[in-house]
Image (cartoon, rainbow, N blue to C red):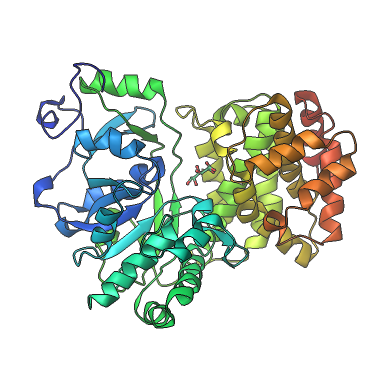
Length: 492
Ligand code: CS2
């Protein structure tokens, strides 16, 4: 801890300056009704805030945040009684203390406590933000070769990963005659609920076919779309928060003022009155998840790789570079939007305008390097679906291939500079980045050999050829070469 300084906690909460908003309910009267896997920045900026808005009226839905492997969040927040500060980065930044996280566990150190929570009858909802890689998916189903899945299937009572815990908890509930919990994925995956359901059922089937049948019949896996831009916490935020609070917050969170949450209304064991906090409940989230992934996250990744090659550091700075901003806008309007079809209550042009304005928000220092993480997991969900749809409909894919080619150059540059890649395939990608050199065709082929990444497009000769052209057009991938490629691709 930071010496003798006062920390944010239940004890210091009443003494905070009056302008700092705080929980509008008595936290001691709340009960844990939600187990959340992955209480990282996004969860604490988004879902935990919606629940904080609800707890005054719905005290049964406080959250137990479970980190699977890292003890960092628990170490920061347990001494603070789960309290932390949220900074909303609008024109005038506003601070608010969030109280919905009542318990923090780290599964690696306290597996029994996590299983006890999952089997607690008061817990009726399990939510997840474990990022794309946490689901251990391959194509449409579970990756049975994934080390975490191999491990958990060998010892299902002592799991290590999210799928293993979800099923272990459901198994305990069935043994005890309890209803299952609803499982709600809040990650950036299209059809996140459907994919998680399939993965859970495939896993459960290997352990106990009756259990799998029970889960299929009794549990619910709604789809959801989550949205709020959440830059990683930095020292500037910690300092700003400490000076406004008059005490230390070990891990404050920041995000843009905008937030959206759309949830398919399919719960098996009750739910909070989410709509009271502004959540959109829907019978069918009807492609809104896909629209968000393709129109926000896809362009985000495009800015991340192209912008990083140009030496740019943040999204707002990238949007001030005319060649890049123009390219991304054209990509959204001309290449991505046409693949979305017509969606009810959805105006693509207005949605795009709003996203571009959010990207330009100068109050947010959203680092491109943060968005560039996990490219092998993100690109398939964010861009490859659009490319596959465009190919099927006979639309051009040249512009869509440029960010993919930029990712490849980015991987090569990091490998060449000896910078570690944050990516579950990081070692393999770095080896590939170091090994190849000189022949663009061979370099692209080496990337395409990653079947798990390119599955939806592998074997498509038009894609391979457009990707090679895009890769070549980026030349030495220095700022001038990228600017030149953007100018060409941005036309038409
Ligand atoms: C971003 C997302 O880091 C990333 O990859 O694209 O975290 C993005 O900011 C959120 O999905 C916005 O809702």
